[in-house]
Length: 454
Figure 1 (cartoon, helix red, strand yellow):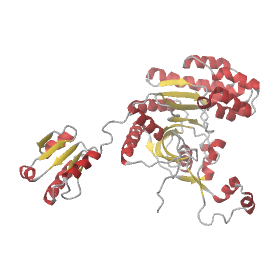
Figure 2: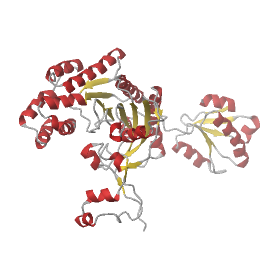
Figure 3: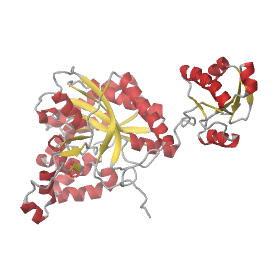
Figure 4: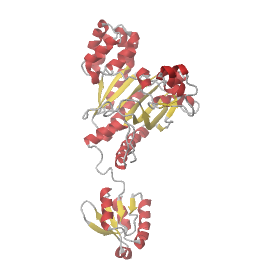
């Protein structure tokens, strides 16, 4: 007996009804991106490992899916590594490519590779899948789509404000209640300085970024494990528990970070962003959160995360400013900032809260019943007129199929109207249109039908 086919854990099939909902998300997000002047971009699913490695920190590098070289890939492998079963060193010899981990590093690579062809500031959006060798669980997948929007070649904090405006508009359109968390990596660097552990910045950010997942006690234990002194951990506590509104937190931070130049620069940037936002009076809930660190090592300024308020799930949007990413590829002094909308998590949130439009799964607006060859030939001309008017319509393809079967097809596809065109309708130039919800049936002309469906 043949084994039933399956798909890898952490991946999903998307049936037509699911794709309609996903496209609703993609179309909504894309329309907002375009509204703010961003242009589309696509990059290959796989990149050279030299492009990907070292850009996501040690933890990120471990989650890269690596692709075996073509042909006899073991031919150049070290006998020593093979006998030792040293998978890490062996992988470097048998794999030169990997699946992209995110869309930001490929974007930076594109900017450097095509720097003479693009105009700065370069504003692009990109909606494509990414892959991470993570442990699959609820809300966490090995293959998932990201909807990224980035601008590079500009240091202006107006870009950060514009990203926040886009977050506000996207989630208002999708009707998801969210909170945007904001911090600044310079502030985190300043905190590391004032507690006496500047060289432990990465360890500190990786640990405190897990605060909402593992709690303060576990974060402190991880910091101790990473070599921070009891005194430094103690100095960190009041900073992590800072209370008040955004302005009050910034005022308190000024006294805490007074001796740190980089920390004060971070406060200045945050203050500027909040000052720009105040007259806009966005309904979006925006909160300064000093435990927000964003684990990716390339962030250098503002960092963002968006949380859904009505569903227990991880962040559904995240991003920040990166001053040095293109510098890794040899192009200096090109700062960028961007955010990524997690389409799969957004889908899960909307599905759980039943936020998709009720008629969103309806693609076909009207189905023509097929009574026989003469009738189907007449209906083909009517279909052409409907489709030319932008109306989604179809004719049941099996000539003379039983009425029960045809109506059942319309029911299962949630088609709202069925057209019945027999000898009488052909002779008097009308169409009998049945409303599948109410059961009401009326005879109208093709012109009237077009107006009704539009």
